[in-house]
Image (cartoon, rainbow, N blue to C red; front, top):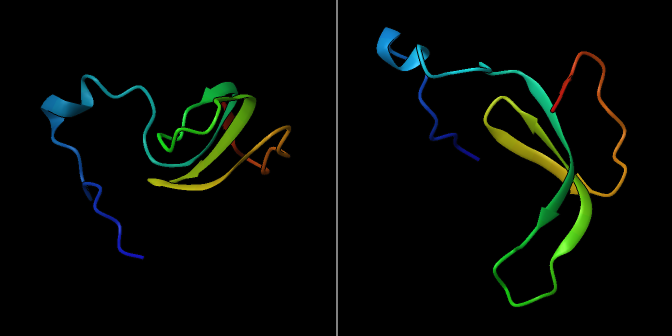
Length: 68
């Protein structure tokens, strides 16, 4: 699947960026998928570069990932 994220950030944009591309795990989130299904609580999201790779409860943290 193609990625539509920017390849490089301008210096002006970098002033607002806290985390650059990498592997991140966002933990203990409430996810609303917009389909009308009930919200899912205590969910994790694994993001690799600019792609969501996995969502679910209590996901294992990949080696080298930043946990947020």
